Length: 228
Image (cartoon, rainbow, N blue to C red; front, side):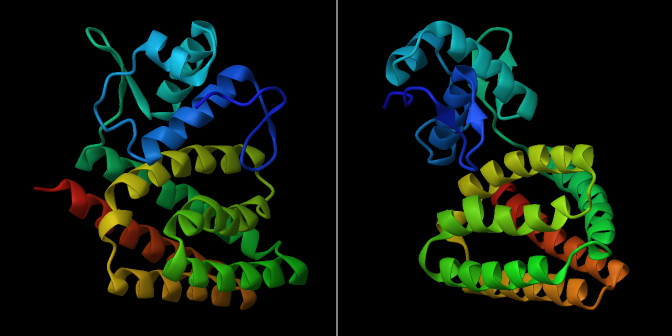
């Protein structure tokens, strides 16, 4: 499938360069399992597949390598990253520290309109958990957390969190969704409800605890799929 013609846009509507558009398409192919974990990415083949020159493909590999989604192997070239237990654990350890800080800051800033927006998102998220896990994970869940962390008014903190969540979303899409249990989905609903309750109570420490529990649960579920 070719990369769309200019102008390029990301899922959130922001403009993309040609290399950014190629990187976005490769993310989608990796998430869908069309480019399996550990598979070699041949520059010329990707360029032909996406209908672009080799230059934006090479630049896209570098973008994805910085995100941790592609590994530059000395002998094999660009390879789809295959996460280990240690990789997942480190990702979540850093996220817990950053996201707990962000939600504590956001708890003091969120207004009634934003809280109502989160309530409406939660309704859509709970429905998507039953009908469309891709919609929940890739769109609604990201929007839910981004709405909270943006309210912290720390742009660099938000940027770091978003980069780490990009990588974690890949982990979850590849390792969790095919076999997710009803018990796990019920836990996700309860955890998101507690996050909103803590925000409405204007309780920063309670909100941080809620995020920690939520992330630790996701981490355990992901790592369980990696362990033999």
